[in-house]
Image 1 (cartoon, rainbow, N blue to C red):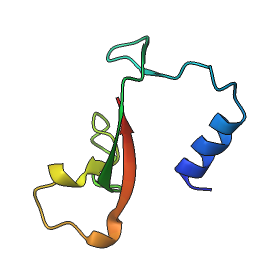
Image 2: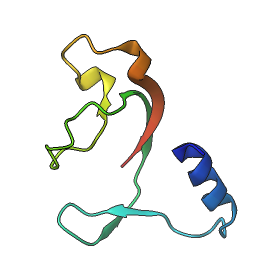
Image 3: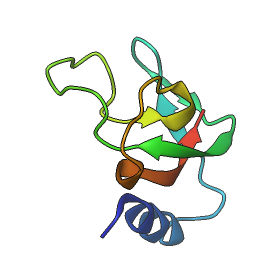
Amino acid sequence: MCSSDLLIKVLSELDPNLNVYRSGYEGGYQDVTGAVKCRMVRDYHNPDEWWYGSHEALDSVYDNYSVEKTEDGIIIG
């Protein structure tokens, strides 16, 4: 099951009036304030660089990364 299928499944089982949160910068949680569809490069960052997320938005990539590793995604903010 891909992550979007899992998210849709979980959300479909919840009360539609339930709030959705995202992690805060240094702790706690914040309201989700938006969502943007974008093209993502999967597994772009080296796992040893733990301070980066695994993936990167294609428009932030400066090299000629393989198109096979890109996919549509949604970034929540």
